[in-house]
Length: 306
Image (cartoon, rainbow, N blue to C red; front, side, top):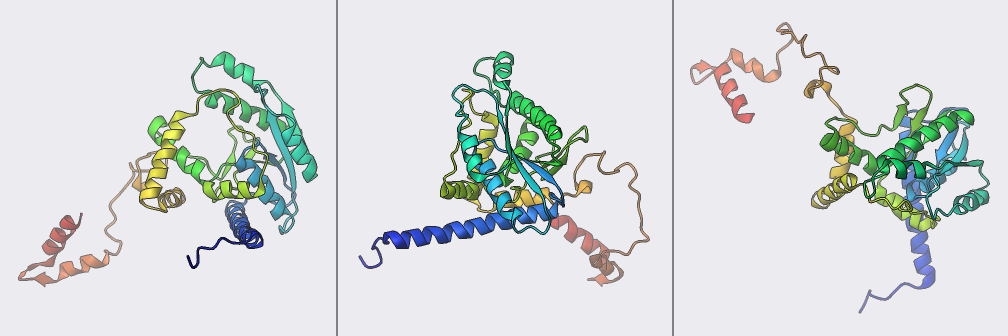
């Protein structure tokens, strides 16, 4: 059939290069915008890039290295991996990859696996305790190497999922901020992929053929709560494309007076102020409608519109 011929190998390669270049430019643009919006990187920063061996952290490091070459400010990148001693962890993969890049890097050997297996009952999700132990180790190491920022590979989908996780299971309205000062004030965490979509990161990692290390070595079941949220959001996205983006945009457009947290907005002190100009529609109150004050008509219309 006309138009159904397969592309030649050179044509396919050219098409793939075009797709890759467009995707790389998009991710660079989104990372650059997030860095600028939240002042993530400043002149002289020493950024500790946490590299887990997954698609997200590989992509983050690759894009940051790319941006480093053209950034208007000078900053250092240091890759750090935490080897938690899970059975079967291919400990040679990351050093080989980083040696090839020629970047400064460290591998922290810390047997958090044994601690988690000792504390968590068999079959239960280990992700929570594992992440807390990992975070504490990385925070401490950032101080040892004099890193001014800690870069984590969470993307936009992670942040929206966390919002719903905390709402549904934690009864609080919070997520992963693009930039965070630790509770003790000793570390600043940045998430350069905050504006990036997971599917774009997955496609980019496929193009680059990163040596991915799966996050299932510890034998723990998946975090079922997060998986439930992920499936819910994927269903919403299929029904109405762009919904996840709208939710993320809402996280950037918060109105405390329209919520219910008394620590964020002073509901107790609200006072009438009728010296302020009325809204435009209320000027009709000085007129009449069919022999009756227009204020009544306005009131009826407003109640119906509610």
